[in-house]
Length: 438
Image 1 (cartoon, rainbow, N blue to C red):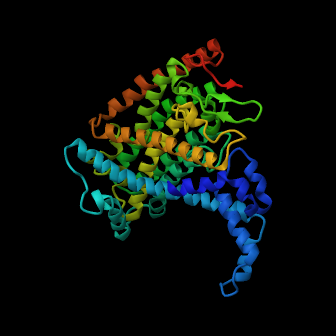
Image 2 (cartoon, rainbow, N blue to C red):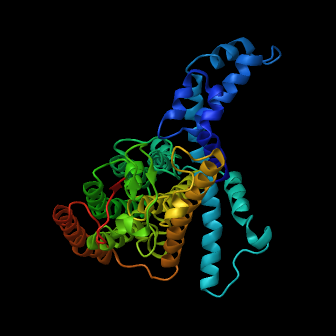
Image 3 (tube, rainbow, N blue to C red):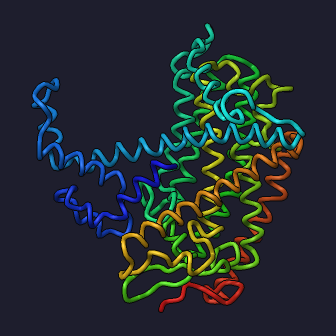
């Protein structure tokens, strides 16, 4: 999280640092800044000024590569990938520790206490344990598919972070079809799960795979209907645009979006959106295989589901993918329903916006928006943990009943109702407010 904030501070102050980026200074005039580009530009500036020392192996080749005009773009890409990957790992470590503490306090226990202050290093110790474990592949397993499946599952989750913003102007890539990309790439994760269960040559793994594929494919339909409804109401697939439309007002003269109040959020856009947000959250629990929808990993029935035969870091990749998916679905809910980085308090959201804002005001405003976005997402992650340790696991037939006979009809009604509301109100919210052009 600190790396993201640190990167974005540099990106926001891009006009001052633009000289480091050489021919790419025009990047700082764009609406969305790539924080990684600044660091790549600084590296290029240092190299072109002093060069790589001759005592460094292959110094002549390195000098030629680093002096190439394409290096800032390549460097930005690599740094962005590294930051996203780092965030996912740091979040997973923190989420595992938090869930242990949440479950412990709900059961009148203390949870981890011995390893580090309040057991905060317990998850680090578990990670080291997984690193040291032997990587075992069953003798009758399909070895290539068995080895590839964890990476595909993790990549299927990680790729969906590409169009996901972490705050104002902090995004890996603002895709025009961002919401569609998130929905479509979810199929990659299902493919990896099927590969894991089939290649293990284990009946319990195969049963878990069948359950997982059935559950994830089924619950993608209510989630997809929620996405379609938001797209119709906002008129855009871009997650940045969806958040900006919940900002309240747009100044036509300078093109800056100014923060509005809480009733500008999509959650309050019409009466159907509130119901739709609840259906999305329930479906997202099933998509993440979280209780009460954790049937694919039901220990009392399937040993450990589709990753029964996995050990060491291959098992850890499944674990990382699950916790990364928890943040992913929570962050998407924040973007499409809860106003993204807008706090709903106009003076606070307007800080640092506008052409007259100082660098200090822009930096403070940016940090506030990052904090607001992450706070909302972490709050929803906490609710997921709360639900897990409160509700019992449901049966397979109940899981399918909830999807096809409860969530799907409700989502369809919300979709049709939202469309009719948009036609009748001209795009205004339930409070009579829409995007106001000043």
